[in-house]
Amino acid sequence: MSVGQHIPFGLRPDGSLIDPFTAERGLTCNCVCPGCRLPLMARQGDILVHHFSHVGNNNCRNGQTAALLLAAKQVLQSHRRIELPELVVTATDEPRFGRPRQKTFRQRQARWDFETVQLERSVAGHRADAYGIRADGSAGVVEFRITAKPMS
Ligand SMILES: [Zn+2]
Image (cartoon, protein in one colour):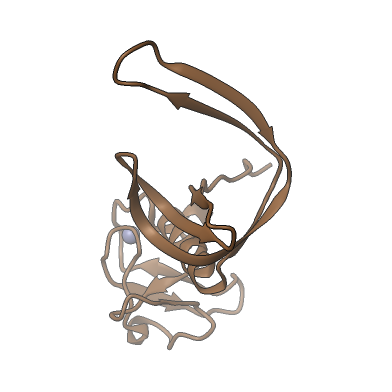
Protein backbone atom coordinates (compact mmCIF):
# COMPACT_ATOMS: atom_id res chain seq x y z
CA MET A 1 0.00 0.00 0.00
CA SER A 2 1.41 3.38 -0.94
CA VAL A 3 1.14 6.38 1.34
CA GLY A 4 -1.33 7.86 -1.15
CA GLN A 5 -3.86 5.24 -0.12
CA HIS A 6 -3.77 6.27 3.53
CA ILE A 7 -6.95 8.27 3.93
CA PRO A 8 -6.83 10.79 6.79
CA PHE A 9 -10.60 11.20 7.32
CA GLY A 10 -13.65 9.03 6.85
CA LEU A 11 -17.06 10.34 5.84
CA ARG A 12 -19.89 9.49 8.24
CA PRO A 13 -23.52 8.92 7.23
CA ASP A 14 -24.44 12.45 8.46
CA GLY A 15 -21.86 14.06 6.13
CA SER A 16 -19.34 14.91 8.84
CA LEU A 17 -15.72 13.75 8.84
CA ILE A 18 -14.12 11.58 11.49
CA ASP A 19 -10.42 11.04 12.18
CA PRO A 20 -8.94 7.53 12.61
CA PHE A 21 -8.00 8.20 16.25
CA THR A 22 -11.60 8.92 17.24
CA ALA A 23 -13.27 6.30 15.04
CA GLU A 24 -13.96 2.76 16.19
CA ARG A 25 -11.44 0.26 14.86
CA GLY A 26 -11.99 -1.57 11.57
CA LEU A 27 -15.30 -1.59 9.72
CA THR A 28 -17.20 -0.60 12.86
CA CYS A 29 -16.09 2.99 12.13
CA ASN A 30 -19.17 3.03 9.86
CA CYS A 31 -17.68 5.45 7.37
CA VAL A 32 -16.98 5.65 3.66
CA CYS A 33 -14.26 7.08 1.46
CA PRO A 34 -14.82 10.79 0.66
CA GLY A 35 -13.60 10.05 -2.88
CA CYS A 36 -15.37 6.88 -4.04
CA ARG A 37 -17.96 6.41 -1.24
CA LEU A 38 -16.96 2.77 -0.65
CA PRO A 39 -16.63 1.49 2.94
CA LEU A 40 -13.43 2.25 4.84
CA MET A 41 -11.65 0.47 7.69
CA ALA A 42 -10.05 2.44 10.53
CA ARG A 43 -6.48 1.18 10.86
CA GLN A 44 -5.11 1.68 14.35
CA GLY A 45 -1.95 -0.39 14.36
CA ASP A 46 1.27 0.17 16.28
CA ILE A 47 3.60 0.82 13.33
CA LEU A 48 1.91 3.20 10.90
CA VAL A 49 0.14 6.38 11.91
CA HIS A 50 -3.57 5.70 12.30
CA HIS A 51 -5.45 6.06 9.02
CA PHE A 52 -8.34 4.72 7.02
CA SER A 53 -8.03 2.34 4.10
CA HIS A 54 -10.33 0.64 1.66
CA VAL A 55 -11.36 -2.96 2.15
CA GLY A 56 -9.29 -5.12 -0.20
CA ASN A 57 -7.93 -3.92 -3.51
CA ASN A 58 -9.71 -1.14 -5.32
CA ASN A 59 -9.06 1.49 -7.93
CA CYS A 60 -9.74 4.56 -5.81
CA ARG A 61 -7.25 7.23 -6.78
CA ASN A 62 -8.56 10.33 -5.03
CA GLY A 63 -9.65 9.23 -1.55
CA GLN A 64 -6.78 11.00 0.19
CA THR A 65 -7.17 14.22 -1.82
CA ALA A 66 -10.97 14.20 -1.47
CA ALA A 67 -10.66 13.76 2.32
CA LEU A 68 -8.21 16.68 2.64
CA LEU A 69 -10.33 18.92 0.40
CA LEU A 70 -13.50 18.14 2.31
CA ALA A 71 -11.71 18.78 5.64
CA ALA A 72 -10.39 22.14 4.38
CA LYS A 73 -13.89 23.20 3.29
CA GLN A 74 -15.47 22.13 6.60
CA VAL A 75 -12.81 24.01 8.60
CA LEU A 76 -13.36 27.16 6.50
CA GLN A 77 -17.12 26.91 6.94
CA SER A 78 -16.94 26.40 10.70
CA HIS A 79 -14.22 29.02 11.43
CA ARG A 80 -15.13 31.48 8.61
CA ARG A 81 -11.51 32.57 8.36
CA ILE A 82 -8.60 31.81 6.05
CA GLU A 83 -4.96 32.88 5.91
CA LEU A 84 -3.87 33.64 2.36
CA PRO A 85 -0.26 33.45 1.21
CA GLU A 86 1.02 36.10 -1.17
CA LEU A 87 -0.54 35.28 -4.53
CA VAL A 88 -0.17 36.36 -8.12
CA VAL A 89 -3.72 36.63 -9.44
CA THR A 90 -4.69 36.81 -13.10
CA ALA A 91 -8.28 37.79 -13.81
CA THR A 92 -9.86 37.66 -17.24
CA ASP A 93 -12.80 39.82 -18.24
CA GLU A 94 -14.65 38.44 -21.24
CA PRO A 95 -17.21 41.05 -22.29
CA ARG A 96 -20.05 39.99 -24.57
CA PHE A 97 -18.75 42.43 -27.18
CA GLY A 98 -15.11 43.27 -27.58
CA ARG A 99 -11.91 41.50 -26.83
CA PRO A 100 -11.16 39.70 -23.56
CA ARG A 101 -8.90 41.61 -21.20
CA GLN A 102 -6.51 40.16 -18.67
CA LYS A 103 -5.15 41.81 -15.58
CA THR A 104 -2.47 40.38 -13.33
CA PHE A 105 -1.77 41.71 -9.88
CA ARG A 106 -0.01 40.66 -6.70
CA GLN A 107 -2.29 39.90 -3.75
CA ARG A 108 -0.39 40.49 -0.52
CA GLN A 109 -0.49 37.98 2.30
CA ALA A 110 -3.77 38.49 4.11
CA ARG A 111 -6.35 37.07 6.46
CA TRP A 112 -9.94 36.97 5.28
CA ASP A 113 -12.65 36.90 7.93
CA PHE A 114 -16.08 36.08 6.59
CA GLU A 115 -19.51 36.83 7.99
CA THR A 116 -20.97 33.96 5.98
CA VAL A 117 -19.48 31.08 4.00
CA GLN A 118 -21.27 28.96 1.40
CA LEU A 119 -19.62 25.82 0.05
CA GLU A 120 -19.91 24.65 -3.56
CA ARG A 121 -21.56 27.84 -4.73
CA SER A 122 -21.86 28.75 -8.38
CA VAL A 123 -19.93 31.94 -9.17
CA ALA A 124 -19.97 33.30 -12.74
CA GLY A 125 -20.69 29.87 -14.20
CA HIS A 126 -18.04 28.14 -12.12
CA ARG A 127 -18.56 26.01 -9.00
CA ALA A 128 -16.32 27.53 -6.32
CA ASP A 129 -15.13 25.50 -3.32
CA ALA A 130 -16.30 28.33 -1.08
CA TYR A 131 -17.84 31.79 -1.38
CA GLY A 132 -17.81 34.18 1.54
CA ILE A 133 -19.00 37.66 2.39
CA ARG A 134 -16.72 39.81 4.56
CA ALA A 135 -17.79 42.41 7.13
CA ASP A 136 -17.32 45.24 4.59
CA GLY A 137 -19.72 43.49 2.20
CA SER A 138 -17.06 42.39 -0.25
CA ALA A 139 -17.04 38.83 -1.53
CA GLY A 140 -14.21 36.32 -1.48
CA VAL A 141 -13.99 33.17 -3.56
CA VAL A 142 -11.83 30.33 -2.25
CA GLU A 143 -10.49 27.47 -4.36
CA PHE A 144 -8.38 24.90 -2.54
CA ARG A 145 -5.50 23.14 -4.24
CA ILE A 146 -4.12 20.00 -2.59
CA THR A 147 -0.47 19.40 -3.46
CA ALA A 148 2.26 17.14 -2.18
CA LYS A 149 5.99 17.25 -2.34
CA PRO A 150 7.50 14.15 -3.94
CA MET A 151 8.90 11.68 -1.42
CA SER A 152 12.70 11.66 -1.44
ZN1 LIG B 1 -11.99 5.69 -2.20
